[in-house]
Image 1 (cartoon, rainbow, N blue to C red):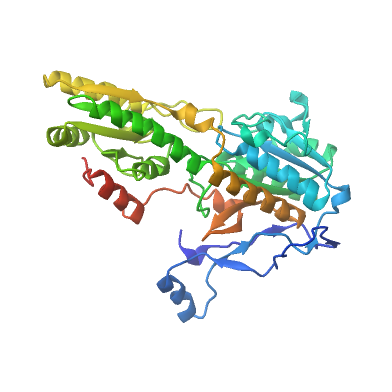
Image 2: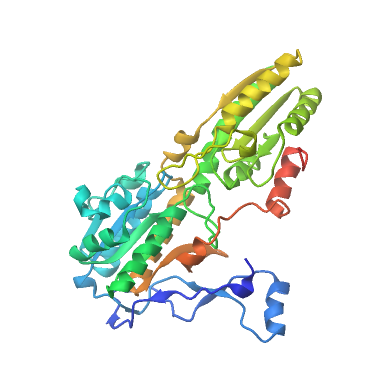
Length: 429
C-alpha cells in the first residue's frame, strides 16, 4: 500500500482523567511516533513536498489513563488456530492488569468468540496472578479457542452485562476483523468499550506488523523436521525428503526455515507459482548432480495444481487441498514412470509445531505485546492492535492491519536470499 494513503490515527474513547498508578517507569507521550518508511529516499519525497511522512503511534504507559483501575473489569479471548505463545500473552496481560494498574477483575472467555455469547453457556474463567503463574510452560491456550463469527450485538450484550471496560482479543486476521466489529457495535451504542487486538498468527502475515509471536518458535521447530528430512534423503541414493509447513497464503515460515542451515534445496511458497512439470525437471537435475534433495512446501503453495473446492471452514476460509500429499504422490509416480529408482520420505509436522510452548525470544515478545496492550487499553485506545515496527512496539488501526495479508515479495530481498540459499531456479514453469 502506498504510504501516502495511510492513516495511522488511533481511535480513542475520550479524555484521560485519571493519573496512572504505575510507578518507577518511563511514560510515553501521545506525540511519540515511529516513521513508517525506513529508506531515506522514501522520506525525502515527503520532505521535498513539505508534507509529514506517515508514522505509527508508539506504544507504552501513559501518565494519565481513561479507565479508573479500581472500577474496571477486563476480558481476554483467544480465537483461531493454536500458536506458540498464547498462554504467555494471557499471563502477561493478566499480571500487568493486576500489578501495574490494580485491576482485580479479569475474565478469561472460553472457546473464542463463542465465550462472549451468553446463551452458549461457556462460563468465563476468573484470571488471577495465581491462576496464570505457570501457564507459559504450556502449549495451546488455557482458555480454549474456536473459529467462526458470532453476532457482535450478542457479544456486546454480554460484555455490557459483565461491565467489561477493556477486551483483549488474541488472534489473527479473522479475530481482528471480529474485534473491529465489536468496537463498531460498542461505538454505535455509546458504550465505552476498549477493544485491543494482540496479533496471533503463526504465519506472520498481518499487515503493518513486522513480527508476530510464535513465528520464531515455528521456524525453530520446522528446522527439526527439515533436519530429519535431510538425514533421510542424504542416506539414500536418489533420496528425497519432503516437508510440508504452514501456512495458507504467506510462505514466511517456509522461507525463513530454508535459510536456517542451507539444507533445503527447494522452497515452494504461494507467492512464487510453479508448474508440476517445471518443478519435476528441476528436481531431476538436482538428483543428477547431488543424488539427494530436500523439498519444503508451504500448505498454500501450488493450489492451482489441485482440484478446486468450494468448501470453506468455520472462519470462511476456502479449504485448501493437501499439496504435500499431492506432491508426494506426483513425485513417486513421475520417477516410477521414468523407471528411475528413488526413495522419498514425507513429513508433516504442522500440529507438532503449533502446539509447542514459545521459545525464549517469542516469550519475551509475548510479554512486551501483552504489557503494551494493557497500556493502550487503560489509556482509552480502541479498535487497534499492538505490533512491532522498526523494533518498536506500536499501535495500528485494525482497519489497516486487516486491509491485506502480508506476503513475500517475489522480487524482494527475502525471496532472493532463499533462491541464493537453495539454488533452485527463480522460475519453475
